[in-house]
Each structure stands twice: as C-alpha cells, then as structure tokens.
Image (cartoon, rainbow, N blue to C red; front, side, top):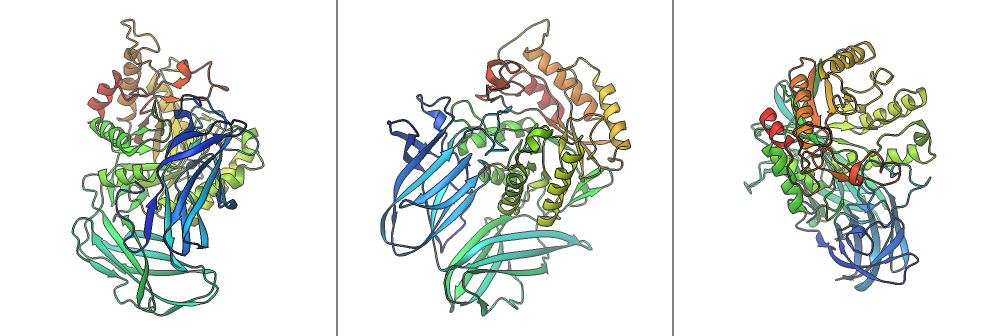
Amino acid sequence: MIRLFKQHYIRKVEELEGVWDFQLDGCDKVYRLAVPGCVEQHPDLLKTRGTGAYNREVYVEQNGNIRLEFKGVSHTGDVFWDGEQIAHHYNAFTGFSAVVRNAKKGWHRLEVRIDNTFGEHSSLHVPNDYYTYGGITRPVSMERVADIYISGIHFTPYLENGVWMGRLEIKIRNLAEEPAEISVESFLEREGDGGVSQLFPASGAGWNNVKVEPDSEIVFTAEQEFAGVAVWSHENPALYLWNTVLYVNGIPVDDMIDRVGFREVKVSGKRILINGKQIFLKGFNRHEDYATVGCAVPFQLMMQDMDLMTDMGANAVRTCHYPNDERFLDLCDERGIFVWEENHARGFGLERMQNPNFDKQCKDCIHEMIESHYNHPSIIIWGILNECASETEEGREKYARQYTQIKGLDTSRPTTSATCRHLKDICLDLPDIVSFNMYSGWYKDVPVEETNQKEIDWIRASGGDGKPIIVSEFGAAAIYGCRDRARSKWSEERQADIIRENLEVYMNHPDICGVFVWQFADCRVTEEEWFSTRARCHNNKGIVDEYRRPKMAYDVIREMYR
C-alpha cells in the first residue's frame, strides 16, 4: 500500500512489495527479505551495520518510460537498472524517484544497494537515541509514464475576508526531445461523494493548448474562490480529492490525484489558530519503531498506534525526529490529528553540525519533506534541528538558513524547533513558535512549576516574547512491568506520578499552547554512546512499551487529555 487512496486511474502503477534477494557485502549467503522491511528482522542480521544489495526481476509490459518511486531506503540508496546506476539518495526518511527512459518490454534486473554505516559521509544518521536500521524500509512502486507526465501538485487553501480560496500549482515534465502541446484539467470532489464539485480554474483559461519545450518542466498555477466547502478540523476532518488529468492532442495520457483539506493555520500573539479558532495541542512524540519490525512499521501497526493515541485523547503528534511514512500522515488527515513534522537532525553539538555534508543533507531533507508532504492538511507546523547547537553563533547561522529555506517553500505553516539549551539559546527570535524540552522530575528532582516559570520568563526576555510556547518534550522512563510501592525511578508508578505533575502545570499555564509527551512508545537506541544511560538499549520513556503494552501512565494521560 502506497497511500490510503487511489492516486491514478490512467497511469499504470505496480507495487514492488514482496520478497527480494539480499546479500550483505563480504558475505556469500543470499537472504530472502521482505520489502518493505529492515534487514535486522532476519535472525542472522539482528545488529547489521554495513552495506549490501537488494535484487529482483521486474517485468515491463510494453516499451516506454518507467518511473521508480522509493518511499524510504535506509540510510543511503543507490539504484541500478540492468547494471546501470539511475539514482543515488541519502536519508532514510524522505522519498525519491528515478526515471528509466525507453525501457524495453520484457524482464529487467532492479538492484538497490543500501548503506546504514556511520561516518563523515552521513551527517544526520549517527549513533543516537533511536536506531538507524538498514533496508528498503518503506514502499516501492514502478509506474509507466508517458513522455510527458504530471510530476507534482501543490494546493494551498486560505481564507480571504471569510471566504475560502485555493491556490493550485501543477508541475508537468516533458521527457521527450520534441516539444509537446498539452491541456490540463483539474477538478475537486468531496471524498466519498463521487461527483465533480468544481473545475479548477473555473474558466479553464490558460490551461489549454500550452506548449512544453523538450526535456523541460512547466508549472500551471491558478487561484480561485471555493464556495460552500466543508472545513477540515480536528472535530470534522473533511477531505477532498484533487483529480488532475493531462491531455496531449485531446487524448488523456496521465493523471494524478491527491487529497487536500480546507484549513488555515495562523499564529496570533501567544496562540495558534486553526481556521480562526484557538487550539491547545495535546500530543505525543512518536518514533517509527516497533519491537519486531524496526522502523518498517506496517499499516496495521500504524493503525494501532493511532487508535491508542486517540483513545488517550491526543489531538496531535510530533514526528520525532524525521519526516514520517506518508501512510501515517494520511491517517492523521483522516482522524483530524494535528502534525508537527520536522527535518532529520537530533541532539547535535556544534562539531557534528560542522560536518562538511551537514548543510546539504539538511537542505535536501527539508526540500524533499515539504515537496512530498505539502498537501497534508494535518501538518500544521514545520520543525527543524531538535536540541542542536542553538546557543552558538555558528549554530544560529544554520538555524536561520533552514528557517529561510522553509519559508521559501511554504509560507502557509508556522515554524519551530525544540530547544534544550536552557538559558543559553540565542535563536528564539527566529521561529514562529518557541518550543522547549524539559524533564523536570526525571533527570533532576526539581519542582515542575518552578522550572517551567523560570524557562518561560527567560524565553520572554530572550527573543520569544509575544510568541506561542509549546512544551515539546517531557516525561520519565519506566520498564514495563516494573512495579514499586516506594515509587522509585524506573517504576511505572514513578513515571505516572511525573507525567501527572508535569501535565497539571503545563495544561493550566496561560502562556503554554501545547504539550507533547516524550514519548508514545519505547524505542531501540544505538549502543554506541547510549548503552550506559538507556536500560535494555531502549529509550524507555514510552507510555506503552515497544510491543504497545500500556504502562500505568497510559491511564493518567487518558484522564488528563480527555
């Protein structure tokens, strides 16, 4: 399953999930591994860190162009078609594609080389408080595309004098060596209704008989009013399908469908507004990690995570600390769950931020995240650089550069980053929302109210005055099943106590507009640098364990969130 709805009726798409051959470099044995999946799922490869290659045969039904789409390869993927390299991509958490022009009918060899090693070549995937798995960890598909095809759609809803407006951008790519004359039709329909609601643009002006030069891309744009549309919100997450059809000489040659919602995100003083209404975010930080499948979480388990979080009364999730699988974002769209999605960088001091690959790999991650996930109405905040060197001048330059990049790609959503540089951060003037991570009661036995007020006073005096504030992380660790009437640390009782004490302060403070518990579920960590502070080589601050078994804190959060 690529998405939770059908994206094409004209374009032919084949999902390449199933069993692939895999061979670890330096090893003679050929394994049969599931795709999507992590190599660590095999009993011989439980702690694999290295390089290797996936292989399979694919069949092309007729001569033409083939587009391969990879939703996630960890952490580096090199793709070969019949032995010829057609793609190179870094970062496990963003997708990429490659086009094979004029592929011949018949069988072809598809090879994907993967690398999950640490080193200078990888500035973002490092030994960390979550695990870097290896493999083709998200879905793969093979598409048959015409010489000219739709390469992307962006939709931006906004309110103007109380009326819903929409701005649409459609990208068309011409692979051929000859120009083409095209027409584009795009229309909106309410999901489940089946009928055409409104053509876009209403007049069709400028969308007919347009010339596209060889080996080039053209962008169609339009803005118009939408009367009587249903609004997307947490309480009523109304969704629409954008169906765009591409014609050459009057013949439909390609189509693309994406799902959108009419909602507007604004920051007004100390408050976050959705469609003009003040919201309070009650959320979880969630890693893509499950005990038996690693980061290749199947849809059924995504559903279980969503059900558990909503049962506890959550209305928000933070995709710590990387872009998430798009199927999970689709679930958030459907459930009305607000999403803070962020780029991939966590806990970096200045030395790691000065890796020669850091700036480019961050830039690529941000671009791919926003380009791919732009249309999700559930995403209301873009985040960057969790707990990085925001107390340094060099770090500030990198924060500023990334915020500027985001605003160049999307001005419809506010920005933030979670800081732990308490009383030292010099970047609080840069984001739209100030967010801080604070573990009162866990790392230090200090009063929550006292540390919280000290933090807020400092934020107001250090560039964050007049901005919304989110408590982006708080919590405590507990080993599932560890019970202690003395309520010692690592017990479920102590974790539940600390969670309650924090929520009682944060949810009742007039300056705070959101809280995100750290974390939803226990997750595996890398042994390097982390074994001595993480029992079981897991971050045990989950409200459920790695098998999703609830701890005592589950009922505390359910009581307070609901």
